[in-house]
Amino acid sequence: QVQLVESGGGSVQAGGSLRLSCEVSGNTASSNNVAWFRQAPGKEREGVAHIYHLGAPTYYSDSVRDRFTVSRGVGKNTIFLQMNRLKPEDTAMYYCAARGGAAAGVDRWRTPAFYESWGQGTQVTVSS
Image 1 (cartoon, rainbow, N blue to C red):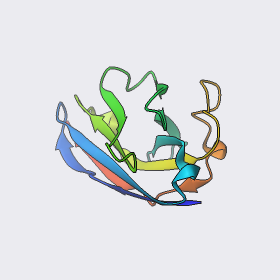
Image 2 (image 1 turned 180 degrees about the vertical axis):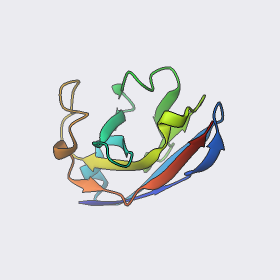
Image 3 (image 1 turned 60 degrees about the vertical axis):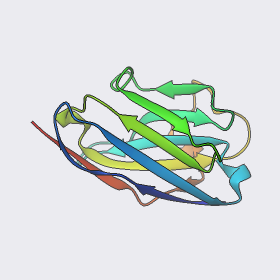
């Protein structure tokens, strides 16, 4: 298992940007797959983006494609989510999640049950 710690959340106006970070520690082989999820009050947890340990493939939900970018740091123990052109509907608690092994693939990456480790989350609030 790995430990995941998110940071970088905050409050911004619509159209602004934030960069979230997910620090991975422990058995990093268990973080081949890392995904960002978000959950707004009263809504289900939604897969936002996913990256495999090689830096590819990456997947995005339709709601964030072309606005958000997921990447791994040089040491590969930090996963970033660059969020541009933020909208009020992006307001949520953002979580990173991890699992080792083979790539999740397009059919599984957005399924919360696929992941074995979760961080505590970081709040993103976008005002109009």
